[in-house]
Image (cartoon, rainbow, N blue to C red; front, side, top):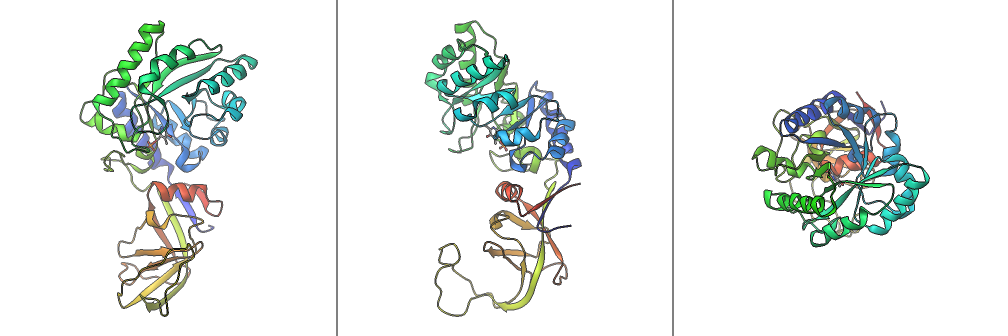
Length: 353
Ligand SMILES: *Cc1c(COP(=O)(O)O)cnc(C)c1O
């Protein structure tokens, strides 16, 4: 095997997807599996589908292209670029939108291809990332329904992404209310009311999800077994479907404080050190080009990640449970940011098991 590596156990991904889709199913809610954090590796996306997601969703067309071989609806999550209108219509069955001019471009492309492109209109309920401001939502919907070869099949919202706003029965209740106003004003039926991402799951637990919300877009909860409103583990899911593995290239006892006058580190920061005496320090061959060191937790609970430069990550293994030598492999759990970094780094080999 080539290191550093991101090792993915697809059975665990399938298990997590099944547990979540079964639970949502009892509430009449379907889940789109979000693939962006692992760059839509097809075998892993396939495991999500086997686990029960009805569709696959990604923020990038480049990733959706990797999924053409999997026969489920594809959703484009990020508001499309006008310059990509053609690819959007080609590779996404549904896209999430908030800009009328872009929708006109999609309408034109869809007409040329003799296709109907379905869209979910995104409504900003206060998180201040994407979406038409809620007060203007009904009006924008009125413009969208006039567009040829575009079908307004639903509305949705995205919370806890930028502003950290937590989904509640109040803000999602407003989403439903806006949907019903759109339906009665324009005489249409909205097939989907998309109630957000993994941060909306806590409402299911509390039985507070408004009735008409019938779709969620789930990434982190399937991939890492965590809900994202409060960062809690989801019972009976795997937290370790993804493993980051790196090889020890140096192992030496050294002081914990550098010797000499302290200037700036490789990233222009002035580092601060705490004297912990002599330490057994391991360098693994991985760095900020591969990973976010702050988001790694060694599986060996005695190992501490001290820091990293571009290509070297330093570990304190003084209190490690295991015995290590140069050439050994250290395994880590990843958080969302570390997983994203590893998945997008060309230097990290991806192994699907
Ligand atoms: C990334 C993303 C999601 C998935 O979020 P998770 O917290 O990983 O479940 C859902 N919707 C949109 C619009 C996204 O960009």
